Length: 197
Image (cartoon, rainbow, N blue to C red; front, side, top):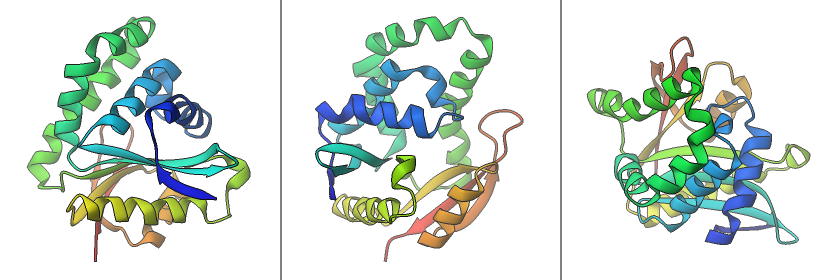
């Protein structure tokens, strides 16, 4: 297994894994084209990155994060506004999805009040057939190394209350519970913080 930083050509494969393995998440509802643009932007950004796990040159898992979420989203909308708009166009007529997009954009403002770290682990996923083989842990270890390289001392993660497997993973990795949060109405989540030693 090879663990490394993703490059631009990996964006579509990462988007496919995201949609397949996090199919109940809000971002998955936005479609593969939008996710590809999002991951391409992360890979090319100086404020974000994606680490991938590969077997025989195929991506089997990934973890994405930002050293500064606010700056990443600002740059994303500056550079990818029109391609993202085209990718999202069919979804924007769905009132429920449009509301969730607005709620997601407002979330960094809520964070400011809570004095949370600017750095964040956004997504971690592995293909189901590779669960239980330590892939997620290896991805996380490489993720920490990359955060250290960017002089990040602590970062957060937001995880849904309805995801006990993810909660168990983050607690096992050493994250500490910070506070409850609700990004989307009627969907409780938890904020955890990880301090890099």
